[in-house]
Image (cartoon, rainbow, N blue to C red; front, top):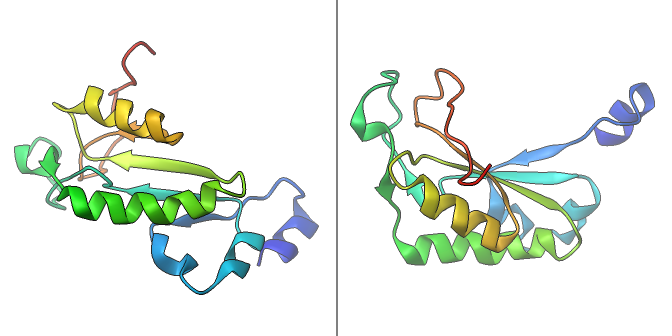
Length: 125
């Protein structure tokens, strides 16, 4: 897909969405994608359509789960691949942006609804 798309547009990018563990036993994956985007490494929320529902963000993930994800993402980063991080956090935005930036990820904080773009920006942005 990547080779075909680049025949049409040389700047075309393939960004893997979630599925961080696809790399297990398949290092050739690193040759066919340009970046990975991972949701909810540290914070999640209930997937609902109500943008204002307080259950749609700031639900803390188990730290061992977060560590598993990050250990896989290190493999992508080891070849210079960008990692985008979408965290479902509003109250804990500063923590999530600090965590993500500390790992070298490109963070975005929002609500699980994803019904609209959020105005939550990185602290100091």
